[in-house]
Image (tube, rainbow, N blue to C red; front, side):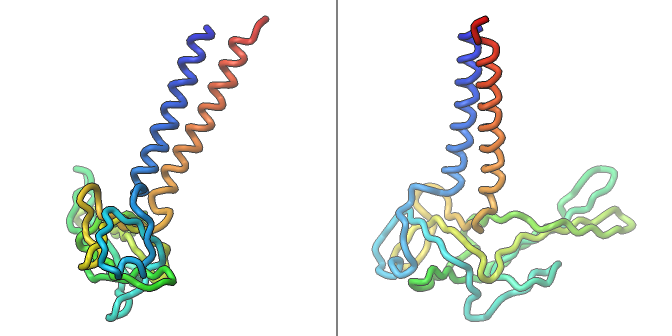
Length: 202
């Protein structure tokens, strides 16, 4: 019984370690942390990690198509939901560069060549003769905290040689993974308590 309890506890700890590894990979850690000012030297850094707030480019903020909110980047998708299930009708995203500002300076960010990680806003549903239409938006607003993983060279920010060029609004993905960590940690504690009760000498 004691050996079984140890095995179960080790399995739970391995599950927790797996979630932590996923969080590390999603965050794009391993890149050298740079300021925006340091990216202007033209020295190759691959990969690099930057953090700051999003600012609109020279043309100013853009408007999200469905909500009308001012933002620096958006992605939209529309599905038709009928008896056959959901069908993607259209999707689009803005491609205008925006700026990352960390207080040391600003650097241009090109979302058109990057993977953008943002939690979607609430779904908007409209009824129709051919079924319900469901619209969703993903936004990066002016002043939102943003983290980047990219390569830096004389041309600015480009895709790294290995891995993804990643733009992530802070907290967009981490919230879900942290919830998994908390749930796994609770499971480890509960299993440890159960194992202790089962193996306690009587």
